Length: 60
Image (cartoon, rainbow, N blue to C red; front, side):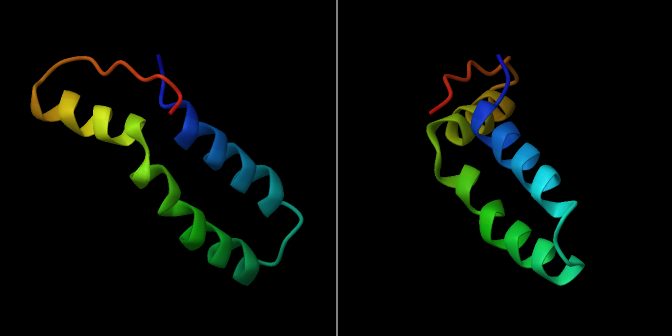
């Protein structure tokens, strides 16, 4: 499985960024970059990396 929360956020930023000014797009990116860091999937990704194993993401 992939980190669905982070991918969904990245896709939204890419889609929305096409119609925004570069300044607004960068502000939005900075704001939303912190979101996936506070998810269980992020914690699982970090744990998997530190334990040298494949992550098991749940979209949380």
